[in-house]
Length: 282
Ligand code: MN
Ligand code: MN
Image (tube, rainbow, N blue to C red):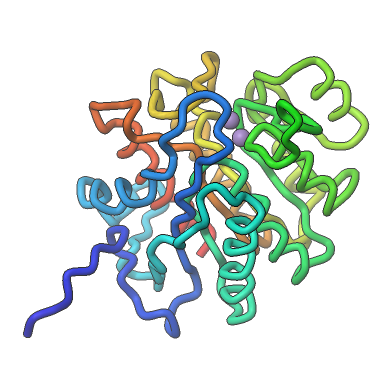
């Protein structure tokens, strides 16, 4: 029998109805402040994913043993940021309505706002854990309030104080860090304190957003705003596995820009992060 030529992320070829996890691409990079290109992340990851295994020796779990639906890429309105966010919100809402966990592949980090708008409607007590090199707490960036440099401030607009927990942060302007002290928990440079946060968030609905530039550029150069002094792959993996003990109701990975790493290593790293994330939150 012949099958349609449809490429999914490796091991994520289940039907929608049978899947507890839904991955989808949000190929949006219109507000990127420095070097765009994240719109190509999800497509590139699907094709390059066939270079990794479905089996994780870290978790002794296999993507073949869990049910993940790959919804492909959303067709987003370039040039209309608010509309693109609404499209992401609507798709995420549909997935949540069907009692599945949305796992989005960005895109630049602003796409997280669209997903969290939907998740916070379903879970008003939502808490957010952010792994990132950048604080993303600006009130606006060059006058624009919707930007990948403001995304976590916009998430705070929805959730309020004491709901956002940042790790790995090593870049931002002084006012971001000062504002953050009163409104969010920020752990600079690494994952210190993650255990305490996990103890505190037991039983709460949690959204995990992983800006892949939290990784050191030596591991992950394929991103628009690389920032030296980042964490290793194993440190990120360990942190993801710890967070996965919580009630994860949505997640994303973002900011892979495949074109800035012609070796393809960054894309391979992103694929491995996604595999481990899916296996961990399932
Ligand atoms: Mn970010
Ligand atoms: Mn970042």
